[in-house]
Length: 117
Length: 110
Image (cartoon, rainbow over all chains, first blue to last red; front, side):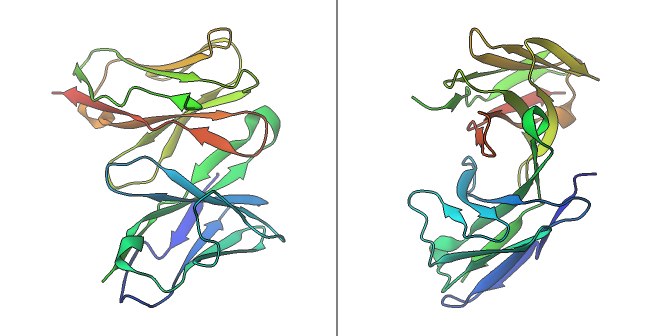
């Protein structure tokens, strides 16, 4: 169990276009999902916490108008990178929490590699 | 002070040896502790979690927790070249958010 999928796994786009990345929990329901970004040889950076049925909570320094998050159901969260630029090229990873209390554990999707030309 | 600290490494061990990865955390209220492995170009995958003081074993992996010292470690016995990866320590302080360390790079030499 605890499978999280992401789509697409790779995307190449032109500067100025918008890109949507989907994150799905396949065998469990997730009220909370997370979006991370990781640049080469750097650590995970939490971008935002996605809450089902409510607005996302963004980390300091992350532009909410540029990185639109929608958590429409208990199994799906989407991240839209609007007006993408080359500096947005990165590895975007989502995760979802499974369990409660001490056993609450975060499971990661396989990631989406974005290249903006 | 960072909330979760790990030595960035690289930690290099010969094949068959024990690799010891360490992590300290700042919040004494932390309740759950996790170790993830991340291969280059891939997303993190959960190895194991621990929330009670002492040792927890799973195959070749042993997690050790000492809440008094705010210290958690991961031992990998009989290290294999396939264990070469970045190991992330993560701490949950009781809310839904988990705080990740920057990771320790491990190289297992054949």
